[in-house]
Image 1 (spheres, one colour):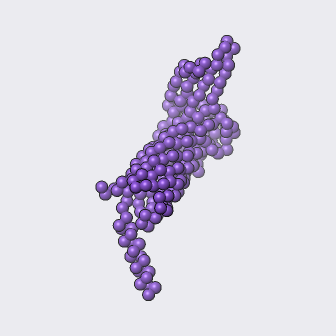
Image 2 (cartoon, rainbow, N blue to C red; image 1 turned 90 degrees about the vertical axis):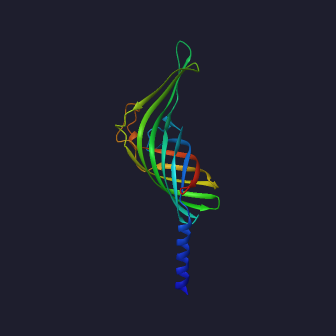
Image 3 (cartoon, rainbow, N blue to C red; image 1 turned 90 degrees about the horizontal axis):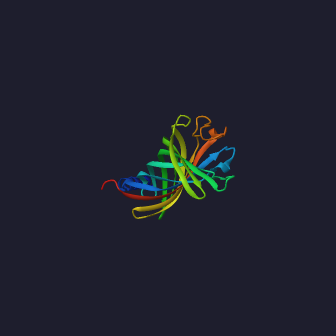
Length: 222
């Protein structure tokens, strides 16, 4: 009797997996990023708003309850400079603000558990650095006087980064809305960079990102 029950359970699970449909989808949203790690002066680095977007592919493992979801995303992250403001001797105020943008191609592979409309996800992530740019804006007495975006060499920065992602969200039909934390287990600098930073401990910096994300899933067989 036990063997028969076990056989029926295995057959039912196999049938459930076979009947479940893999889903191709798209995902996009906002990034709120900064640096973490052993930083000498954290006040110099402020939260920056960026974005992410790309493809998802959900693979059911146990019906609608447990699945594996690899994703391929473009993600803009980095940090905002601490604003610099100076009162000039001749009168007036000069202010400078800016941010550093690190543009990555990311491949998270997430295990997903779905409980009703709520889902939980977590898994490893590999990232490849596509480009870096420095954006500076200058103001005089509140009026913007200049704006420049400069492409930065990747020479001091590692091309590949290893990290992890974990989040929670709500699904309704084809739509999903969630919040995800994206962290790194490797430093992103090969060595200290003095081109834009006077910080000998900058090599200990790691990306830290909160993602607000909206997903649209549809059957891959359609």
